[in-house]
Length: 214
Image: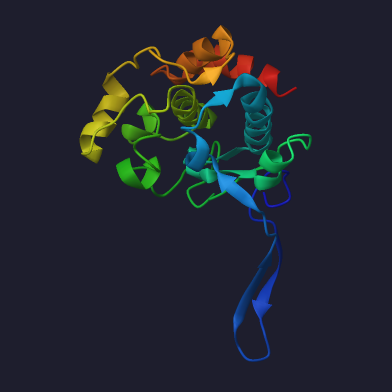
């Protein structure tokens, strides 16, 4: 996993030194969390290359059977260099694979919060204590994209248990406001498609976004 592009951390060495101190040597990445800038005003020209990298990265770890289970803006880092020198292509990193599992294998913690990650971004099937799949990561990306487009998440409640229920039962409202200048209609439509309650109903939108990354 650490050898995939756009994945953090890249661990180069670890062990115990002569004084008995444990050490871990990993790649430093000068990035900013998407959550820190997601509410800013964006243009599609600025958003598009970042989104393409995010999708390509998620597709890469999905291709080897990894399900992240906690996709959200704070787990996506964007290189600061991209914002100071837009001529450079964006460099992004997914972080925090602490809840990740291999698709198709059982996992010891499949109940509610243990399997859920972050309730505000988690999928309906995770809220029901069911096993997370690649489609669950796509749902979480859909929540993140909705927030990116509108400046707020589609579902919110201070009570985590009520929020889990909302994720399962309540359909999202179409965005009433978009703060991404020049955003194509298909991006909004595909984002809403990712928020389908049934994992199978997200497939068409997944394919549409994958086209963006090619």
